[in-house]
Image (cartoon, rainbow, N blue to C red; front, side):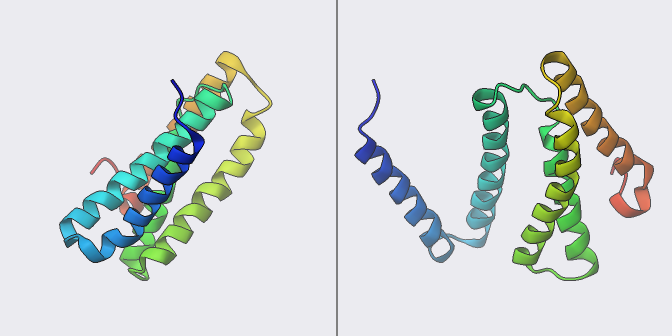
Length: 139
């Protein structure tokens, strides 16, 4: 049974208001936990969009997530601790790598797309392991 669209919009509005009020109501630990949950929820939504709606099963969606995380982490360690700037840098790093990889990947389908997405993820993993002075390697 599908819920009434008005109820769904009301629930979405309540969640949005809750997320906007959360920084003023939660302790630092709980706010950090909520932030982490929202970040992982966004990553899960991206996999849902690729697999569920686009019909492209992927094994490499976490590669862009990790690339953005590394970019934001390196920025915060070496330049500034600004969370907003880190978010922008993470988005830019992921997008700059995803655009050429997406251009290449969407021309395929089925098993070829699956293997290509895995190859891209393994490429980023290998790069992270190859430069331990920058990324920390397997640490």
